[in-house]
Image 1 (cartoon, one colour):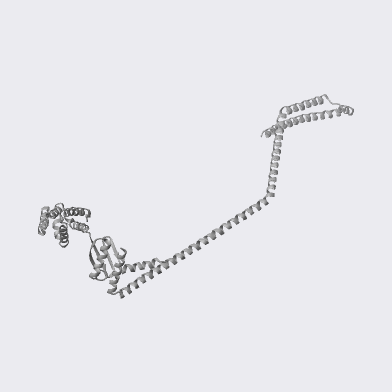
Image 2 (cartoon, each protein chain N blue to C red):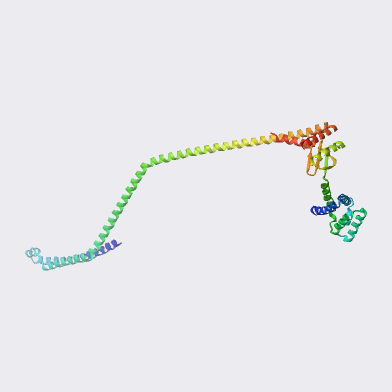
Length: 181
Length: 218
């Protein structure tokens, strides 16, 4: 079960400290790296979250991870605190919320563009330019290919959706034929 | 009931008087027989003497007549004494009864006459009443006829309208179904055409046009 509010609270706390020390980028890297480690190695997540293991063992595991990453003391203490408070399972959600906060602070938006064929770099840059113009933020784009849209693109940035696919246009054409007397 | 009692008393008194009279008669007869024997003896004595005796009343006969008168008077007294009241009462009751019956019959006759007159009057007016009833029934029937016709016309109108609406609905539904099929087929055909004829350049052009349009909107 996701505990987004709790995760946001932890993320906001460490982000505030990061902003004070101007180290929030470093903290972001650490948190994103640990979230990726949780995803790629579930046994690591299990080692620090399983309630069957004693707390001191879980603390030692987290201390080992922190030491191997040779991170800042503050973020190291934060990670140890998560284990002590038995909130280590929230780490991926905290990392996600933290990244949103960093993006907000840097005025960055993440977007995705779906096209029927692979986009060229020029086209991708053009799309990015238009999206940045529309959102007023720097847009980091990811692309994917879906031949079912026939042609055109579907771009999503935050709440903004631009659907210029031929599939949607055909659906609109069909609806207009059906709807017109 | 009272009259019957009086009549019974009167009959019993009459029977008593008759008995009394018959007893007097028998005495008289006995006396007569005795006289006959005497007459015969006198006749045997001589013819002249017989005619002289027969023209005069003997003392015994006068006495007998006196007793007879006394007897008759006594009878009359008894009859008046004991029979006058019951007979009078019986007759009065009879008279009253007859009078009552006459009055009753007269009353009945008056009622019958009145009833007869009423019926006569009714009979005289019954024809006009029948005419009125018939006229009323005809008027009512006319009203009912108009109502029935109106109802039937309304029902026919409703049926016609509902049938027209049903036809209209069917037409609309058929038109919509046809349009949907046409739209679906058109979309399928358009998709096939586009897929078959879309080149890489067209893809780029489409995206560029779209981006230009979106950018222009902004």
